[in-house]
Image 1 (tube, rainbow, N blue to C red):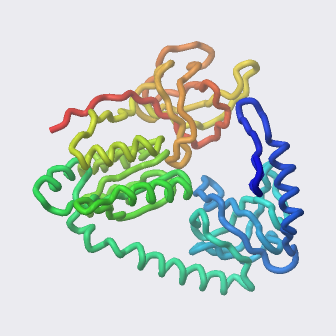
Image 2 (cartoon, rainbow, N blue to C red):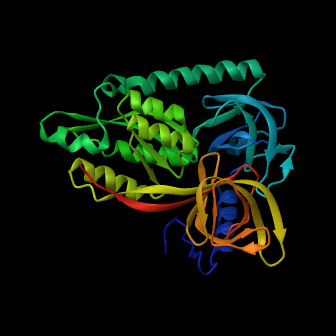
Image 3 (tube, helix red, strand yellow):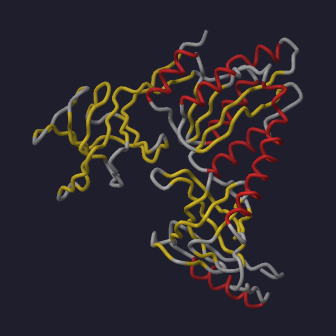
Length: 369
């Protein structure tokens, strides 16, 4: 090709070019003398972060300099803590991670933001002081839009306010599955702002949609946006009684399209996902040829074989598909009602854990008024 830029042909479908890319990266690193000192306190960057059931805040970090060890005090953005465990890319616990090593870090006080710099601190007190100071600064900066939050409108009302000649402010509460998704959604929504439409983020967070989110949205007349997350049953009931609009998405382009169409008064027919059944996973059975079967208790509604289903862990959608098998004791059945136990087999999904939630649902069009 000429020039100084190395070009490597790659294809994920054909498994082409990965070895060539790695080889070229090594060549460039050697020519540029890209080296790092493994001695001293660790420093690096947060690649991704999420709130994990049972483990708390989990940050995937890449060490840039030094060596990160279990037990090190650490500060990552506004998060701080003591490294409780380090997990490598194979899911194995390790005692330390040197330069250019990606690891998951457990033990932080909260979920840091993707892109935050992390550093090992001299002691835990220093890490806490630095983290809390950064957290305070971020809260102050996030409150810059609070003045317009008080007069904001919901998504469904925004076009009428634009038509009246007023500057419309769209109040939003945003919840996402991981920090990276949250940042991507936030930045994309900010780009939709124009002279007659402003966006105010009442709250942004990682994890499932909770009753606190509903209460906050109701108090600020906000629309609640969920990206790859769902409200639990109590949150849905509260949202209905408080008349809080919840919109959930799994594709960011669909989310942005809805926002743009709302500003033009062109919202397409809205469909709501009506939960028809809810089952709690209580035990896991391994059956030859069938794989993992979830021993479940039907908490509400009816679970029917073949219906659309989503699998939730702490309010976060981790899989969607259909029910492959449904049994009561040894009998295959078509449906199981509230209050009964059953065995559920899911197509192409085996990562089952006690405490997980299985929801069946159907889509119904909402009449606009």
